[in-house]
Image 1 (cartoon, rainbow, N blue to C red):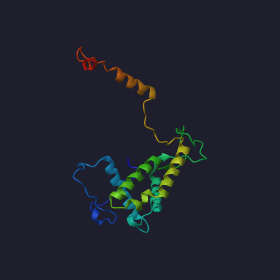
Image 2: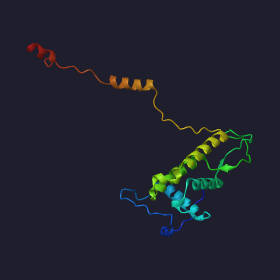
Image 3: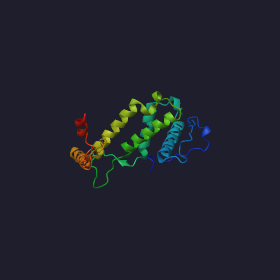
Image 4: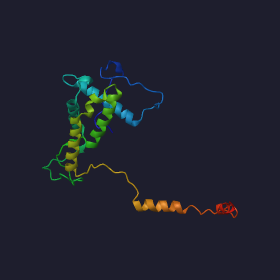
Length: 199
């Protein structure tokens, strides 16, 4: 599901001044992955947003402030209830009844969107050091949205740590591996001690 409505694009991308052709290598799969399709749709939507901006913007003149405008614009299509501090359900993950609090884009959706657009910008010829999606203002905005939604929805957005087996389990596994080896004894006459006695 898209975090915002699909934007119609013309089939002739050569007319789009913000579109730069991406060279395809022979090693890529014939059908693009779901991620690649979503990244392309996100990129086309952002370029459409720039064209519809008043005054229209070119990608080369786009800044972190324009990216923030775009993210705020997307909030109108959000489906995530974000409680205000005066709401009785502020901080409750599962409120018992509806409330008039606004719907917003979820932080996770915005974070993933920025990641895809950041990659698409560079794939379409943008220089990494000029990437507006990596601007400090964008990172701060995403952090602010995460913290606000975490408090308002009563949900923790802490990074998930990789699960590792407890130390006792690792030691038990190593002991089992060692006990599976059988003691190997040399047949009589092939013992190294006999060689030492003969010299």
